[in-house]
Image (cartoon, rainbow, N blue to C red; front, side):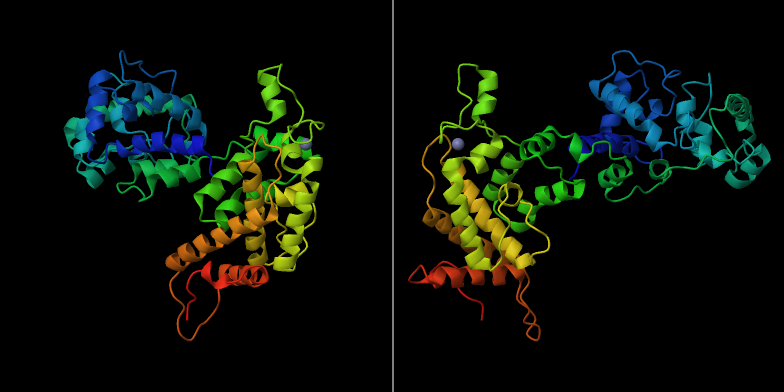
Length: 408
Ligand SMILES: [Zn+2]
């Protein structure tokens, strides 16, 4: 499951790469620099937080970028105080009167370009490789003296410090095409699924512990098996416990009853309202029968398989697909009767399943390239809806009409 917060951080961090010295600066960078005493984000980020000049009246974007950068920096830069990807332009903010422009004019923009295992590259070899003029010698001495202090204080290690993926991206003249995704991939996964409240709550109510992989499967199943946004939304609301059950409403307003509105006896938890309520026992038994009769598989009678989409992976994909559509129709019918004592009828569920079949068939046919003439392999969803059609054939006069025109 993608981590949205981390993705958001990646978008902010991507702006640092977009504004680095080796590229043509985007317009917003000039605006930002204007507000921040000429110290825009890309100059400030590489200076250790303690030595960093605090720009007055800077734009909120600068403050935000610096905040997110400082949080992510230890993982993006090998946790070193001074990074080899530091632009020489940033050094102008901490070395008084340091003339970085002369270096930039000769193609030297980053620290890693002038550092060897032992320290600063000799001036002679820089003259040789980059045609650095003699007038740059004063700034070279400034750099040399600054670097010696850093080596002594161990804020940089020229021997062992390797550039990280982020630093490589920053110093590379051509950034990767999918910049945000590339940065997202370098950020460590901070949040495990089990830290989410909805997972803890479901596990407490069901007295079960699911693995991270199981949760990932349950969360992804709706999107894998349905093209209908109504199904996906319903499944998400259910998994994330969006529904206002009596027990939740009672927390907000003590005068409201905690009891289930259907049976008037059980405590209205999520598990009760969707599954364990005595008034629903026959309903779920009928749905279970529907699954067995249409797919030939018997699904263990448990909340996790019907309500939380943990459809056993051992079952063939065709059957898991059809089971999902039967379950989501059954759950959708319950949602439609929220706060009502009416238990939905199985024929209403069957109608919903057939409608889903119609929609899925049209959409998936459009999205799938036609089979090559020599290769008439039928897709899992075609087999599934044929199974349903065959099963339903016994209950309707003309099952052909709902499934759309057959491919010949
Ligand atoms: Zn009940």
